[in-house]
Amino acid sequence: MRIWILQTGEPLQIDSGSLRPMRAMNLSKALIDQGHQVTLWSSDFDHFSKQHRFSSEKTIELSNQLTIRLIKSRGYKSHIGLSRLVDHAQLGWHLKQMLKHESAPDVSFIGYPPIEPAWVMARWLNRRGVPTILDVKDAWPDNLVEAFPKFMKPFARIIFFPYFLMMRDSFRICTGISSVSQEFLDWCLLKAGRKQTENDFVFPLSPQDELLSEQEIERAAKWWDDLGIKSTNQLRGYFVGSLNDAFDFQPIINAARKFPISFVMAGDGPRLESLRSETQDIPNLVFPGRVSRAQARVLSSRSNFALAPLATRADFEMSIPNKFYDAMQMGKPMITSLTGPSRRLLEKHNCGLFYKNETELNSLLTSFSEDPSSLDVMSKNALFCYNKFFSFATIYLGVGARLLRFVGKQSI
Image (cartoon, rainbow, N blue to C red; front, side, top):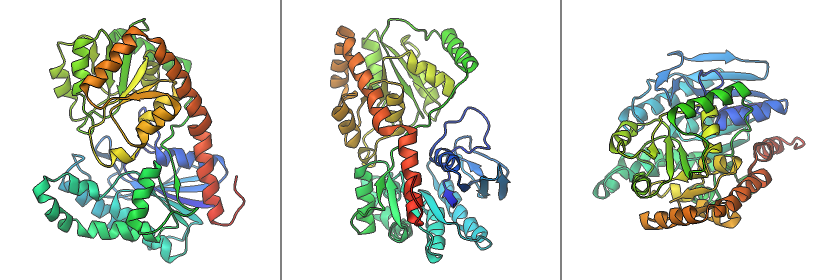
């Protein structure tokens, strides 16, 4: 079966360095393993490095089963700003030109957002009768409006009105919608103006089961040893992610001043240097910067619990971030400020805890300090929950079966 995947803003198989596989790489791998031919459409501009891969439209045949099609665009320097919106408009336009010379696939999977390329691809496929899943992970364009001050939101909604039209059209013409939680899927269906069908489903952000060599683990372990992050009896909480305004690190910083607990907040981002400067007098709080997959694995193994200190935002309250599944895969309890389906997942399976403010976080940390064994129970529950419900094979084989069913073939 010939399958198209459109997913921009994610790492690709052609990228160098220690990259975290996301939707595009994970789904393409699962489908290729099942014997299908995959064409992966993406942007020539790398969202993470902020560099162009080739500075042009490009077709790369990695194997008989995997072809990567790169769409050119101008790029941008910041996650937020006009230049990123212009980049996405260019992606849509150039994709439209590329599609003029294409023959239709058997089935397609479209990542949303960005809005423009998703809309262009969805319309092109719809006109040719190609079954299509629209995979929604962010609440665009609502998020664009929310970025404005309250008094400007009505004007912003007018400015972004074309985006709302493209969103609604994309949601309505696709065969089915997938999203990261039932709450997020309900939001999509509300925008589409229809009820849920068997073609709409929850697609969790489960991580790929990675095989790291003994040498990679040894090098990562030495790297942490050199930073003083060693395997000890000291309680340790960790974070791995982008250091940006999506997270509220202040309660963690304040807790690090009060508790003899080690906190390691790994990752890069626009707030890295300011956070380092603010916390340079706190020896038990470390911001090591970006880490490799092996370094993240070792850090988790040397920690007692994971942290997800997300800021309050409407779309976050509908979602379950990949950090939750990463922690479960490693058998680590998640401590988070996020409510909604994320909190319910932790409470249902007793694999983590929620705090709504700094006082509640301090109370949790006090209980951990007095009785670390409570974390052991949640650790076992986390790993059991991942293996039973959210493993890579369980989730991605299920999505592959759905795609096959759309074209009338026997599911796997």
